[in-house]
Image 1 (tube, rainbow, N blue to C red):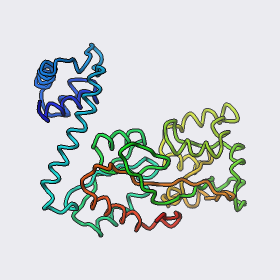
Image 2: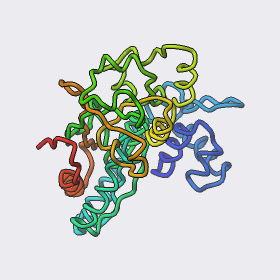
Image 3: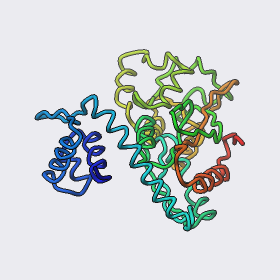
Image 4: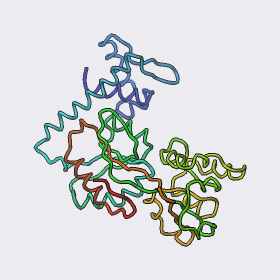
Length: 309
């Protein structure tokens, strides 16, 4: 059994397809298939159930897959120990962020980290919380930026800042004369939301459950057309006068082109907020890199948030 064969197991398990797994591993499909078959013969068990449409792990294959992930991470730890003579900050750091954090934090974080730690570049990915969670667990990302709550065995979670929510209106909206908006008033409007599966959508629905139920067929059609869009696309639709939306405050001022078309309003206290956090594996072998990232994050100039620690 070799580390290469363990990588083949993980690739097939994740892709559920020998061809795609072979491409990821940069080998031919016959080479990968033969290696998997040879390993199954060596272990005396079937790792995968094969059909014409899909490849799935057997029950024992599930256990071996989980152990293979741990072995590969430990092997990477050995390599890192062997590189201890080198600076932990002299290598790229793989950082992921959810879609409603990344576009508004990275423009501040990248130059800050570049100034503080010029030898450590960032490999950046934006994705949903569920995908980032899996990639962090599997060692495909070193750290992730997510909104709490977030709980995962073997993962350290460090709160960074609290971020208030604000309301974005088209310039002509009757509420533009109001100083504050109560969350219950949102139910009277067409509120544009992100699609199902996005944690920020869930947070908005916590403060306005009725916002998930459009008032009439016209607003229902609008809501269907916007679900799954980005916050930036929703902003454009608000500017065009279709409805209103709720944004984290860092996203509210990110776009300068439409200042004359949009108005930002605050909620009546208590103001709804979210807590943004940094998460990484306890077993990650570059603690100085995580500390450098944390320091850069806390130094970022985000005027509307409340820093923690």
